[in-house]
Length: 86
Image (cartoon, rainbow, N blue to C red; front, side):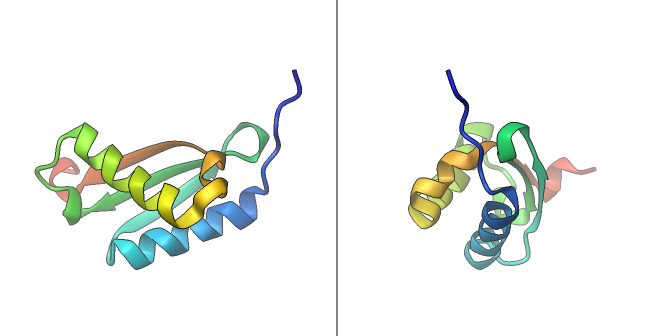
């Protein structure tokens, strides 16, 4: 079975841009995974007090809506509230 390869640079930048627009003041970083997949780490006080499930659903909803088909290139998201960093 052939694996899909994604344009990491393009999708990484799109991901950062979308999350910066939707979650102002968030710190967003990405790393390249297998086949150009995008791994996202995002820290925002918007996530303070949210459960892990709520944070995941919030971020994935944004990514799927705004990136549409390119969202499939994102293999995982690590959302943190600022209250989790101490």
